[in-house]
Figure 1 (cartoon, rainbow, N blue to C red):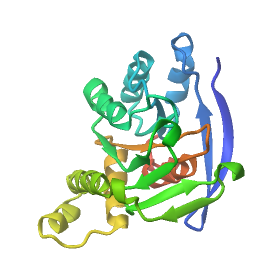
Figure 2: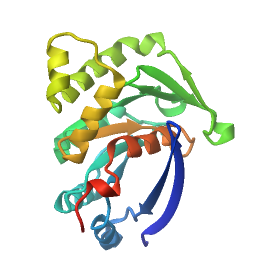
Figure 3: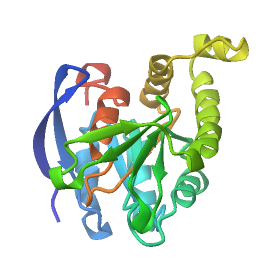
Length: 230
């Protein structure tokens, strides 16, 4: 019923970071805690239920984030839940929130068959060892049955990223190769300017995708030096 704060040291690409996490209540009765926290955040992670998509309280929190001009990324959680539907949840963000969502990951399976994620930027698949609480991440090629779908989502991702960066747009139009780093830089710029919201997925219960989510916080959300004074 109250916001809780903790500190999380994190190693990302060989560099050490410190994240200060504020976890706010999800219930509408305690929305003032969300309001108080939103005022001082550098960035926010909005968590969605993979089966329910956008819920009533989600709209309230989204409006609060708009009011305080907080850059945000979205995490579609509970992909292991019966009835989980990534596409439905993703579309509901655009339809009900006007989020301008941009998928940077896809799930491998859903419900009981959910086993990992596809990174659309690197075009690699990742699975996580649950017995080690997800500490071990296994990188592999994208499964054949998902390759075509991943390519379609990847094309949309590159097109949307190109809209955010003139240099990337020029490379896209002239069919020049585009690196994952260039895509990330464009998405980071668009996220900080609140023009897009990157969307990731996973299952916190099974420790799937949480590590990549924290990497995304560092990759896309602003650090304290990049935001104005409160």
